[in-house]
Each structure stands twice: as C-alpha cells, then as structure tokens.
Amino acid sequence: MWQFLLKLFALSFSLMFIGYIVPGIKIENFSNAIVASLVIVCINAFVKPIIMFFALPVNILTLGISILFINAFLFMLTAKLVNGIEINNFWSAFLGAVILSILSIGINNL
Image (cartoon, rainbow, N blue to C red; front, top):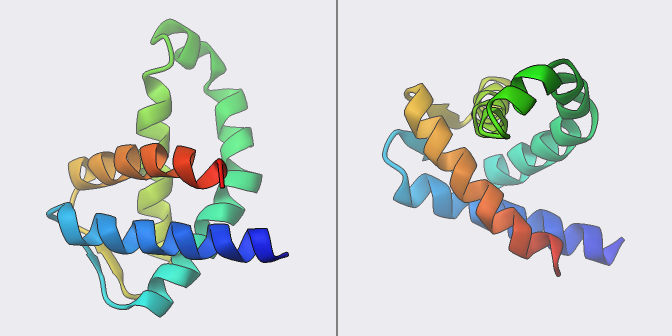
C-alpha cells in the first residue's frame, strides 16, 4: 500500500514537472495532479491494453512508434476527464507523454 502511494505521489510530482516545462500543458494545483495520476493509472490498467490489442498490426508496421501516439491520445483523454488540467494541442500532449513515459520508467523502479 505504501509503495503504491509513493508511486502515486511520484507520478503526481512528475505531472507537475511536465506542466511546468512543457508549453501548452497547464496543471492548476497538486490535488489536480493527484487525481490525474489516479486517472492515468486506471487508463493504463484498463483502456490501454484494449487499444494496444486493436492497434497491434499498426504497431508492428511502424515498429512501435505508434505507441507514442497512443500515449499522447491517452494523455489528452486524461486532460479531458480531469478538471484543472489543460492541454492546448496534440504536440504538447505528445511531448508530455514522452516525458511522462521516461519518468515513469524511473518511478516503476522505486
């Protein structure tokens, strides 16, 4: 339980960091980042495997590059579901999703 909470707070701090450095992504406060972290965890657990299954042929053809675009769309979906998070355009979401993926590698190794 404590490890889950630690990873959740680390993901929330990562989202705040992304909102600070990526132009076009605005996160109002830390409580919105915590809610967004919970939404991201749920989306990655339930929605992403289904999308990855149906996108498997495209993923094979693009040698895995399509995963970056799927992550960007799921990041935009998170912004639509959580009040207080604003993403201006797709490329901001793409850059934010790439940075979040890199930071998540470190978070998952906690």
